[in-house]
Amino acid sequence: MNKKVKFYLILFASLSIGLFIGYLIATYAIKTTFDKKNSITTFYLIRHAEKDRSNPNEKNPNLTSKGLARANHWAKYFDSIPLNSIYTTSYKRTMQTIDPVSRKKNIEPKIYSPNKINIQNFIKTNYGKNILISGHSNTTPDMVNRLINEKKYEDMLDSDNKSLYVVKLIDSSINVEVRSISFKSKN
Image (tube, rainbow, N blue to C red):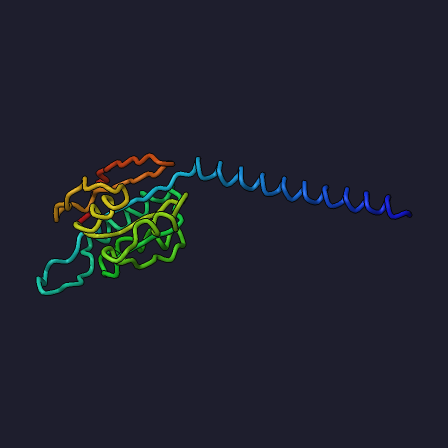
């Protein structure tokens, strides 16, 4: 085989490989762009269920039997909703509230500190996912406000254990829905 033919074969092979690599890169870029434009990130935020108030000095009380029943109700509510991650504060009442959901979904809850969380990193980390967050009467609406970058929601009433905030981030649009999820307790 002469040098001219070898040169053209090598040139043809190099161009073919280059075109194939270019095709792969372009396909990946289009897929990534398409996925990002059509991804929906949904945050479900709840306040802990009813806590034991029998000892006013107890700063980290457990849930009452009604609170445990509500926690089981949350597990039934989220049964048909796919979740990727669950976040909770380090308090017993928030952890007990999401425990039935996390066990049913086989998701290990992640502890977060509401006043230390970098909201932009949090959104980026959970992009395109469905996230459940268990908080408190002040931290739950504050987290919603931070997710939507607007001071819109005030602290919840101390008796409000049934509100569910659903925050959907779709491209550059934000949708917030507040649902009241009631249940009948046997207690």
